[in-house]
Image (cartoon, rainbow, N blue to C red; front, side):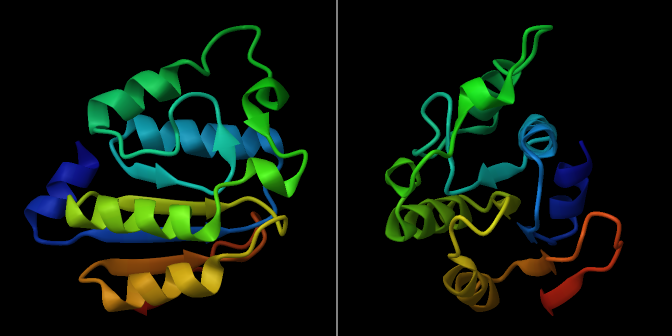
Length: 148
C-alpha cells in the first residue's frame, strides 16, 4: 500500500483540504482516502460512527457503505444546519487521537459552512507530520507545505 511505503520511510502525512467541493466530489474524496488506509477527518456528520476513532479496517467497511447504483450523497451527508456538524473541540480531539496512533491523516472542509482551519493547521504545525495544505480551486494543482 502506498501509505505504508511512505510511512516505512519515516514520513507521516497530514493533508489538509480546504476547498469548495461539490457533494459528489466530497464523498468520493472521503471514500478514496478511507479505502486507501488514510484516516479521514471532517466536521461534517457522515453516515455511521464517524465521530469516533476507527481502525483502517473499520474505516474501509464504513467507506464501502457508500457503494451502489442508488448512491445519493445527500442521503448520507447531513449539512442542513450547524447543529449537525462535529463541534470544533470534537474534531480537534479526533485529529489528536489519529496522531497518537501515527496514522496518515486527511482533514477536509468541503465549504465555508465551518472553519476550524486555523486550529487544525496549528495542530499540524506542532506535530511530527509532513503537513500539506490545499486550499485552491480544484483546477489549480498547487499545494502549500506547512512543515516538513
